[in-house]
Image (cartoon, rainbow, N blue to C red; front, side):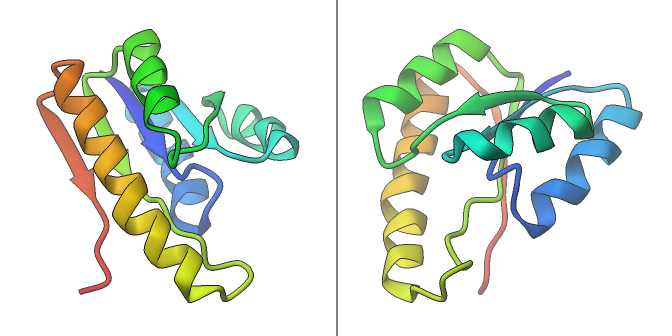
Length: 114
């Protein structure tokens, strides 16, 4: 199964990549920071540079990657900017869901703090 892991360099994403790869999945992992693409590659996934706040970019990535499933691990907590995290969780999640639906992705798993 091909999985798009959104938020691949976060605390959970970094742990998921090796587990998914060992389970036999092909994983593409997103990050918005170019300097983190090497980490994704080292963990066994294909890095995808993406700002999920850019709806068109999310649609383009979804169309290019054509995942069977999307795993949503998006957060923005490193600077403890809770407003930025809320924006990412609201706008980024909407963009991710809309793009996945538009690309015909039938499976999505999302983290929740609730």
